[in-house]
Structures are given as structure tokens and as C-alpha cells.
Amino acid sequence: MKSLLLMVSFIAGAVSMPAWPSEYPQEEPIQITGMLLPAVFPGPPNFESIGAGDRKEEVWLLRSATVPPGSHARTEDYQIVVLRDLDGTFARLRHLSGHRVAITGTLWCQISGHHHTPFLITPRAIDEAPSDSAAATPGRRPSAEAGPASGGPQR
Image 1 (cartoon, helix red, strand yellow):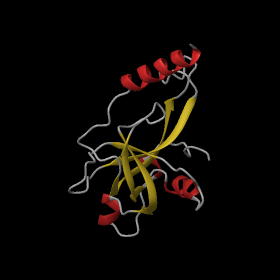
Image 2 (tube, rainbow, N blue to C red):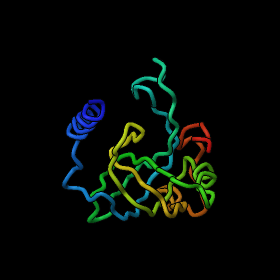
Image 3 (cartoon, rainbow, N blue to C red):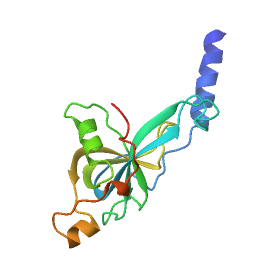
Image 4 (tube, rainbow, N blue to C red):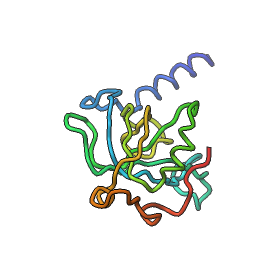
């Protein structure tokens, strides 16, 4: 009886899960440019309000200004997801916080409450990109005011 109840609960949960959007592939290679910014969102248990007791989830966002031709991406914020920091990715993210960057990686759709943007990117490469003002004035870097004062998520 217990196993039947468990199986019915599992099936009911699976039936109520949202379907993967059919217009988007499950993963797509992408190269996109934008501003790298740290952000804080409410996390578990309710993913609604830090003030009401939800834990903070510190994440990295890429605020895009351009969308690659032929991509399913849109102009918006993308959460950066680093699965394993074997090559110093978090140190690189902290170093480039508030700067314009070019990210090459894999684009995918959000699938859990820990994903705070509709699309996420798992990066393979993160490079500093010239900002619009830097392109007009060679050698000039974006000011510290371009991004939040925080140093970003600590990992």
C-alpha cells in the first residue's frame, strides 16, 4: 500500500511539471556580449522574499545588449551557471564584475527555483569585451559605477 501511494504521488508530481518549451532546444551553443553583474535573489524555502526568511542566493548575471543572429536568446538578463570551478572561473567573474564581457558557452532554459532568469548560460570562455565608450576611446575601461558596488557571489 505504501509503495502504491508513493508511486501515485510521483506520477501526480510528474504530470503537474511544466513541459519544456517546444520552441527552444534543450541546449544551444551561444556567444553573447553584455555587462557582467552580481545579483541577489530569494532562495529556499519559498523563493519569494529574503525579508520573510528565504535564504539569499547570490548569482552572476549577464545583462545582454545584443542577441546573436539565429539564436533563441533574447535581449535580457542571463544567469551564469558554473558547475565546476576547475579553471578559476569564479575569480575571473569577480575580476570582470561591472565590465562588458563576451561569453561563449551553452544556453539553456530555467528548470528549477534556483534559476532566476528564463535562460541560463554555462560558460566555456569569458573574455573582456570593449564597451561602447571604450571602443570610442581606446584603452579606457568602464568606470566602477557601471555595476553594483558588491564584489559578487563568493565561491
